[in-house]
Image 1 (cartoon, rainbow, N blue to C red):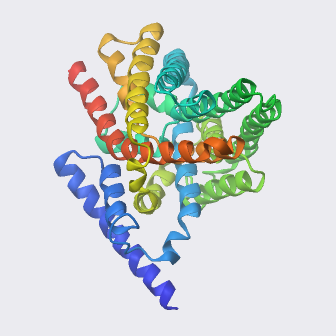
Image 2 (cartoon, rainbow, N blue to C red):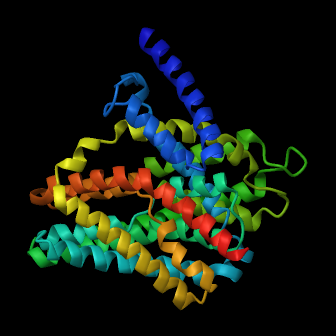
Length: 390
């Protein structure tokens, strides 16, 4: 029982840290995501190692729950009205950011002498974005308007683009090295996306019809938890993407649940406690020492990804015809990177074991940088757009 007692005490302290981060963020305008990650770095393995092992064991479960909630909320932004107004911008900007980042990082790392297969895979990993950090910064700043709605839409579909690009780059890297055709990897990725979309539909359609019938048109908290847990659990059961499934279910519910006044209010109320645990434990599991193991290559990767995001965001926004004042801010707003990138790195390491150590070290090291600094830049982008609009 001592292990459980220490875990409960740690949970209480984590929630207190969340309150402190929220209060400090309001006074200093620092993103609470960065503050929570910093708390995790200090309290976890990289720092004082105060978080009990029992609590660390629940991190994978909390991660799935928290990100599924974020996926529902982002899917809820993809209403027909939003897509009519911003659909073209969402698609064009998201694709431009992904493709330009892929090219800049891949070519840049190859120029630094990184093996071609490793450079291709790391470039694919660079396209991933952290939806949880981006969405929380948006909520914390209270941003509204076309830029914010478009940004939420971009983050919502980013995971789907990332999976497809990653699968295509596995095929490309294997073809370049003669290691195989890679067609099976591509087929599996496309099947995962299609089945994740179908799972989201299968949950979202009855969810849209049945929720909110028992309490004057408002979904109950237990209904929200049921949808989130069901989506997360079935996604894991069938080895599908809970981000894509949750986003799809959220989009279906927001467009078909006409009797709701606010379809996702209860998820918004439930989300923050899970996010506190998620971000602090994420910080506790970051391996900051990885920053020093790959040296100049890591610096190059960070610079190239930053450049790719900036150029891709500007190019996509220009092609989409968004207001001039918003164009330079899309790339900076999409810098945070976390769990999806690490997952891609592990898969890439299995496919190319000769480059596994480099790919993993670069991904983890870059995650430390972009997850801590990325929300700061996202917050600056949101305020920059707001200032330019006033």
